[in-house]
Image (cartoon, rainbow, N blue to C red):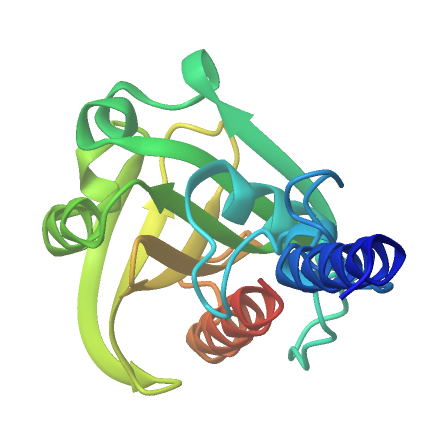
Length: 222
């Protein structure tokens, strides 16, 4: 074999080796993990979702309830669309703070010569909410006198209702408040009617039902 043929064969073998090396490193238009920066997968480039369905907790749940738009609810007395407010820290009662309430979300539905509202006490854990729900009574506050209690199943939840008189507000007023634990939240529906001593038990139950359903809808968007 002459010298020129030997050099040609050597060059061919060298080119073949280079081609194999390039293929092994991802050459030929494929991503080269040694030279190129890492490719971003679809998962790493997408914005992570805040939480899975029904998993909103703490401040995220408070924000969702406060901004979720309360649905219409049929009441026996005239009322307005809901206006929502949030109470935190020193705005909460000592009893709430000691029990572990993070925030209270209030939806005020107004009313003619009355007040109708839905409220949510949001806790960090289901256990805290359960303990509060089992021990809570308006009677723990000096401005209310509880005149009777009853139990009901509302929106699939065991609820307690209290008939009460507002003896600290300076005006003759009575009401009914129904409440139930739903996970880490205690939901309340309340009807107060001035110049009575009872409120509307049917309205309190209707508002609790709407509140529970609203909570489920908000959590389902999480």
